[in-house]
Amino acid sequence: RDRNKSELSIVQLEKKDADEDLKNVIARVQSRKTAHEAELKQLDDQERELKERENALNERKRKMELSQKEFEASTSLKMTAELLELQNQIKLMHKEIEDLMAEKRNVTGKLNESLSKQGVEEAQADEYKKLAEAELSVLKAKK
Image (cartoon, rainbow, N blue to C red):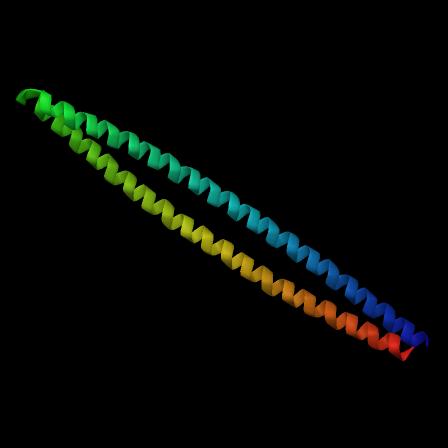
């Protein structure tokens, strides 16, 4: 009977450890998820800012294109150079947006991977908990 009580105590400790491990895993994964979500928000903000800058440049380009028709030939050359510069800036912003989108996909992949790992870790912790509970039931039944 003392042996059964001792085994029961051991199983209860194992169950307590499994519960604690599960809590730790969940806290770790939640922390990673929160960090990834913050990074995604930051990338979204950067993307929005770049798009706003692009829109402003496009508006400036549109105005310059309208003005170009009104200027004389001498000023047209200057405007053309500015338009080319604006077009180059827009191309660079498109590249920055593409890079941000790639980074966003990378962070999203990391988040999905973390969530997948969480599922596996939670399943393992649940399995350990079930085993400990089963052992506990067996020991109680032996009493």
